[in-house]
Length: 358
Image (tube, rainbow, N blue to C red; front, side):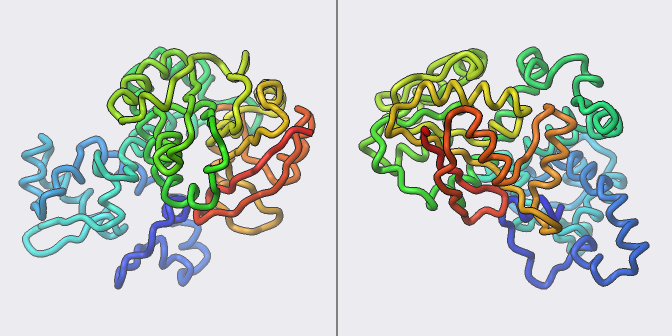
């Protein structure tokens, strides 16, 4: 949870300290116990997300009995879960088993600007069994998800549309955080055409275009994603300035544009696959093009960074990895590209790596 809060830049609640935040004052054995049982909180959050508790509390305080009736649950059991989550900082419990949302708990609302509801359902649903088989990935270097589900994660989402749509929503929650915390760090006004590689539902590119009225854009993603993205853009007011191109970045990237952006794409793939993607980017770029990579840049040594655990998620789920600045530099070089600069942002999770052709 501390990692999650840092990822989204969540501020600590005033006059409220969760037991995770207080662990630093605990004896070492108790600190270890709290880390070992961290999944207890995660599973409770998953239950609250699946039951849409935050949506039910959006209009105001409700007691456990009212929430149980609305969600078809046993009221005493639900109360125990809500009480635990209140101790973790998601709710505030008052008299007569009444519960209300905190700012952190509000991010489990379906329509919250940086909603984490879909992420909770994905991480504790689609991803959970893969993490439970972490030892397989450590022993073999292969994604545990493929062992558990019998197919790569992207094939799984393609063949399980409900889970695939939920994962797209989960990425939208992160994208909205990027829009608030990362985009102000870079001026896109000098670009006439911008391509979002692996752009999903187009949320990131739409935000850029709305602040850069002279630019046009292309969302580039797989066919099964592109269909839904076209429908979203039709309703966004940007259909005349933004188009959708379907395809795989392993095969090609739309050519001849001024800027290419990639958010959390390279971390999904191993080095060989990344070089193939980057080679296609290099071939598509003209001499003055820029490639802007939105990724975690892992610091050396013992410095705390949320990307260090995201890296384990990549190990178990995709076979990809998070990378240091040195590793990114070497990766770009193999594709005939050069890391021009690393731009820090307001988010501890993301930097912007500005890349040019050699």
